[in-house]
Image 1 (cartoon, rainbow, N blue to C red):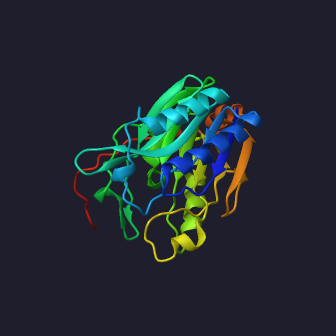
Image 2: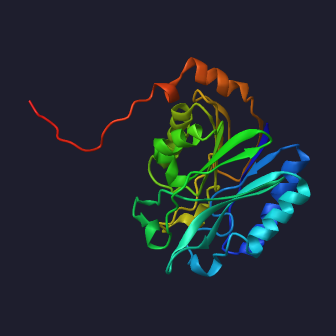
Image 3: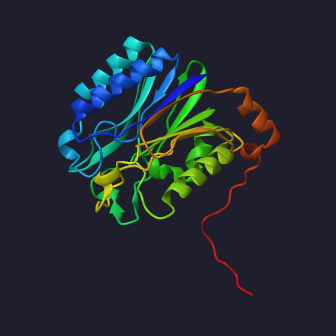
Amino acid sequence: MRIALAQINSTDDPAANLDLVAEEVARAAGRGARLLVLPEATMCRFGVPLGPVAEPVDGPWAGELAALADAAGITVVAGAFSPGGGDRVRNTLLVRGAGVRADYDKIHLYDAFDFVESESVEPGTDPVVVDVDGVGVGFATCYDLRFPDLFTALADRGAQVVVVVASWGAGPGKVEQWELLARARALDCTSFVVACGQADPGELARGSSAPLGVGHSRVVGPLGDVVAALGAERGHLVVDLDLERVARARAALPVLENRRSFRTTGTTERA
């Protein structure tokens, strides 16, 4: 399975961002990719009011994305925002093209490191796995990367590849955490992890608590090895995934089969 990652910098203009998407779709299709992954907030960057840009998942922006993907004959993944309840939106991952149409709403909201995503974003509830050319592909968004149970749930639902899109927040140690967590989650679910983030926006990030990206997109193998990676700046990756590696990893390291459940209630006795 040939995949492409596009590490871009979204703007606050959804129309201009569609132009970026069109460029990346053409580039990925031209290199034979069957799946193109763009970051969280591809539709519009963080740091601006999201309500005015949110659209239904069958709205104009998603429709243009689907048209681009269908015309190229590939499946495209891109972060967007759709209306939620009240004044909140949903942080929605659109998956379109080549016979695939799915949406994933970010489950774990980024209420951390002085940012409160839940003030403006409504959480999703359901893990999502789709079939792309016979391969199970699951989805996660940014802060989801810190929660192993989502990744094992995706593997339980048939995912051999987990796509993680992000607009990762900058700060001391944050790049290292991103890199470490991507590798750890691959080991948790013995799947490929395809982690695509917004590129480092440079001066735009100064003085902002909004998560605007740090770059360092990467593809991690099912045993935690880094297959390919980018630095902080805008860039592109095209990678061929050997899905037999997933079967071999799960045979050698059957953590999904060896799991045990624990009660979350009860008392703790102290000596």
